[in-house]
Amino acid sequence: MSSNAHISEIFNSIQGEGLFVGTRQVFVRFEKCQLHCAYCDTPQSRNISRYCRVEKTPGKRDFYNIENPLNKEHAEELIRTLWSPSTRHISMTGGEPLIHADFIKKLNLEYPLYIETNAGFPEKAGELKDMIAIASCDIKLPEHGSTDHYTELLKNELETISIFYETSKTFVKVIILPETTTQSISPAVNGVASIDSNIPFILQPVTSKQKVSSELLLLLMDFAGKKLKDVRVIPQTHRMMGLL
Ligand code: SF4
Image 1 (tube, helix red, strand yellow):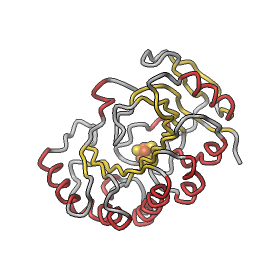
Image 2: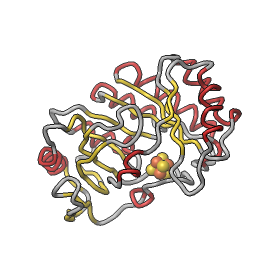
Image 3: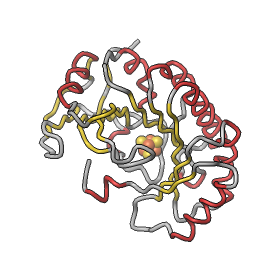
Image 4: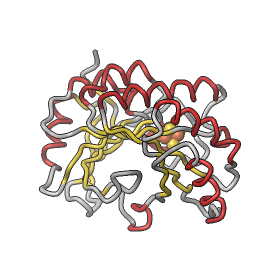
């Protein structure tokens, strides 16, 4: 089991996406990802880099570098230093944090863990589920260009969601592109409904120059709302506020 991990950055900020938008968190952004989504907003974290950058003062962007890989004790110390009175979770993000399940499993922290995952590794979700308080699970759409094996990815994502849903507060996030259709989103809607129609299902319009029309968002909401009870549209708010 690995006691070291390549981490891209560690900082304290405000969660800008999903059901817990507005909540203060310490973010641990792991490196490496098995996918290649066309809209990826953290491409730097998909590669291995020599240094992990750590923000000294929340919001100041006064980063210093630490050599990668980080050991567990050092990561725990940095997280504790960045914790603050209004902080509520440690967000394990990426890249893809489940690639680092062995490392996360070893962390010994007194704070609730929130994981932001592309949900592609059900086995690793099974290993971590008992220590995860909140799971934000993506479902990719064919038009995202994330993989050459879409059917397999979708199957793994749905399995991961059902595993986390057993023990953690779990919600699903789907990025909506201007070209998304009811047809392309249909397998995701049906798959989540077959697990539990109460699972929150967040449509997140992609942050890009090409805007997703309100007409399309409302159409997709109604489409998903026929099978799911909690469908919401939540954009990336940290981008609006100029936060990390
Ligand atoms: S899963 Fe996330 S980190 Fe990986 S390529 Fe897609 S958007 Fe980027």
